[in-house]
Length: 193
Length: 193
DNA sequence: ACTATAACATACCGATCGGTACAGTATGAT
DNA sequence: ATCATACTGTACCGATCGGTATGTTATAGT
Image (cartoon, rainbow over all chains, first blue to last red; front, side, top):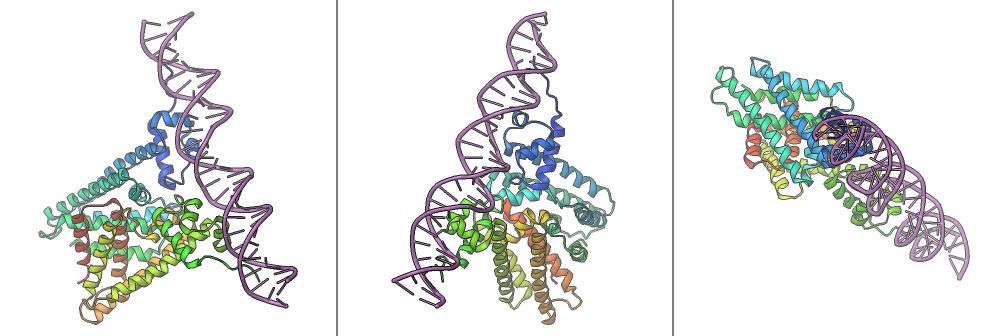
């Protein structure tokens, strides 16, 4: 019936995600987007709507992939303590490795947009809730296996670790000394006992 | 020798600080600034330099006042556990109270500018280090008074609490359920023992 | 092969961006 | 009282912003 779309929507959305992740919403212009996505302006608007809708689509793509990534990483270890320890250390290692530090797209959005836009307040909150459940399930696995004390409050502990994860991810943006974050992680993870 | 300045530099800088704190660097325009500061554009440039220099001056003003505020709050209680507990609960209460949530100007800057501008990477890192020392001194006071265990690693614990503070402050921007943050704080503060 | 339709590229829109030239004004030093 | 000087307000700068009108091109359905 008509001409076929010449670009892969998933690929160009992924490119937009990378850019928004790296620079945030305001600092990313449509010119940045067209060059990185490899398509023209009207193609963006026809496929994704305006800048904010594109941003939201990119963020949704991120949170979905992030959640499954977190779940996978935590399931990769039979020891729950080891799982969290490796997880937090990887956050640090990955942030040091890349320049500039991108951190977590969802956390970045929480800071930049959530206070002024309810859609993003909700979207970012729900992602953190979701991650918290993944943490909680992991902790409960540790209780069942006998690795963690039976009276552990899995939910509260998971919530505390989410807070610590957010704090760590943000702190990495200032490139602190390795000892600072290593100490902080070690101390925080003594909550797992 | 010449005409005298008609505005109070400290007052207009404070106005700029409030605005940058609330909206961030990119989302704050010079028009926003002139109307909120109550002075004209050339006055801003002659007194503070360009937009980024003004932002830096505002952030420096913030970090100085913030550090002394944190110190005061922690010194207000003879019990160190109570001091931290009240401190964290106040962060939550204050963030819920204001709309939109401004959070911490320094943390906001860590997310928005530190990854792309070394000056702010350094400035924000040093502020966190400074707060960490205040936390550490408070913990050491608790050790000396016998409230905390003598073998407590004050430095690592302070660093863990800084991470938690950052995480909590950022999380508040998504307006989570009260139980979430209450649980998280309670669990985190069991590190003080 | 023809046609309707949707994607394409270009070129443009008004608005706003950060920043400044300039003319007018007030004040301190002499 | 004069004058040099720094502050003030206006009006403007080129650049870039997000968004779109338009004409062309390619393709699916018939």
